[in-house]
Length: 113
Figure 1: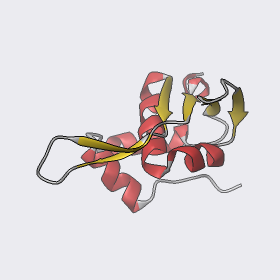
Figure 2: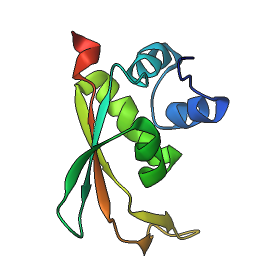
Figure 3: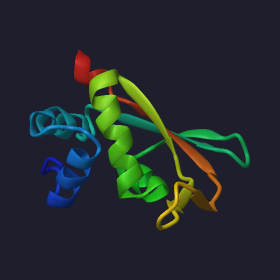
Figure 4: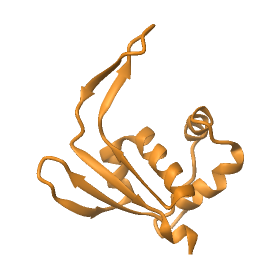
C-alpha cells in the first residue's frame, strides 16, 4: 500500500498554523495507518468505537483532521471535534454552523516506539 503524503494544500495549512517544513516528515510518518489509531465518540449516544483514518477524515473534514494529526505527531495523542463554523468578516465573532456530534481521538503512540 502506498504511504499517505501531505498535499500542497496540507503543507500550506500547516505553515499557516505555525509548523515549519522540517515538521512535515514527522507528520507524514504519523499519517501512516501503522502509526496512528483513531477512535470516535458519538456525542449523541455516548458510543465510542475504533475507526479508520478515512472515517476520521470524513467525520472531521481534512482541515480538522490535519490539525489533530499534526498535534499527535509531536505529543503522542490529540482530540478534535467536528464542530463547524467561521469567523465573520471584519469581526472576531465566531459563527457556529454545526454543533459537534463526534469527537475523534488520535493515538500516535506507535510513532514513539
